[in-house]
Image 1: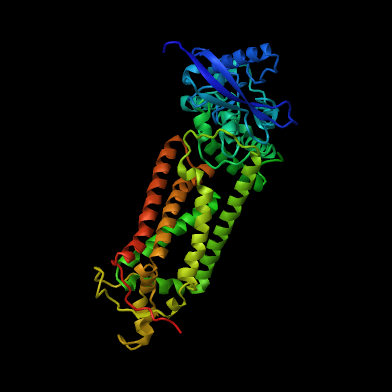
Image 2: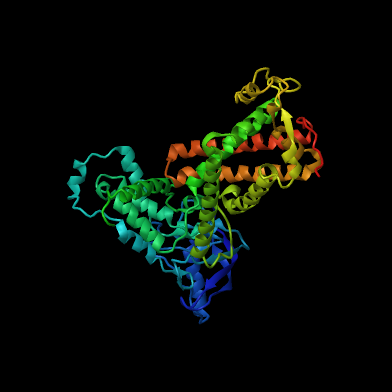
Length: 260
Length: 254
């Protein structure tokens, strides 16, 4: 696609800090290159704001190549924008038309409070990981991995789950602000593999427990998370986690799982 | 939600099969109704209690779900958009809400019968075979005719008189009360949507599906929903169009 320049209007959520009330500010940007990424466009806007002696817009970003999970932003109602399998940093201005008005909001959910402008605190996802997103026992050095045969199908599936970059788009897009897709990817990635199996039950119970305690909503199987996920994490992992959790709950009821 | 839904879906399917006997000789549904009303060991009330518990559990979990999910996103998005969410999945709470009132009306209509108290007086004598209408030339599978006729003077026996459910339904959905039929048909359309998402969702929540079964279960859910819609809606349609007509006239009461 040939490079062009477009003019756009941005409606951006501005909020001084977690305790202040926020509001939308409208900015006009002339001749933005369609080859610039969405974040580069925001960088340009910030330079413009700094020149005007105004506060630049705070937004999260890091690797800018779609693997770190740091960038967020809800663009026209969809986290990471409407393109499939893309993070915000991979979204380019060629996806917009001349004259477009683009609304940029922070992720909205109770567990992710806005700390400033478009930046939200995603600590609850770390809390979920700390509850069981690891393998406790020694699993040996690199060569020991080869000593444990794992089927291709299983390895592929575990890898698909492990593709989650923990960006939180699933929570942001979910009409219920549920973190089931994230949690299920993290639970499944370990529960499927022999190294993670011994702690399967307690992992499911603990991570789901941490997720519920953080105040995320409940899954109603609408599937928006899967569609918005920049890594294409499948809804099937949620079914798998539901199964692991149900089995673990029954085992716990029967006294077969120690205190978690 | 999923477990109570499973019970309710099971009931809905059975209920629909029972109802479809309206398209057979009137003895079929009348004997069926008699059989249900005279189940041994108070089984009727056992089933009714189970259904009540399932409905109450379904409603309570639904309300909790809505409240908790509302709490999880106190501040809504200004720009709203969806990627793939189906109409059915987004309207579960609304279809469910309307269906709740449908169930109450439906019970008042045909079970408690306080919408039309004169329904209680509808009686008909079982004929034992299909005579005037219906194509089936054999007895029904319910055996009520044989049981009742054994007690009295066959075939004139008073004992053969049973509640005329066939006429009750035919009158309830007759063109005189066309708005009732319309309400039923619309409600069944909503039920169809509710099940379309509900049935596939049920398997997801219980963890009983994977990548391959997801597609299959979604299709099964679609088929069941459509069959349930057509099965249920066909009866008011048949009554409205005169395909099914009451065999006992309604006596205006007291």
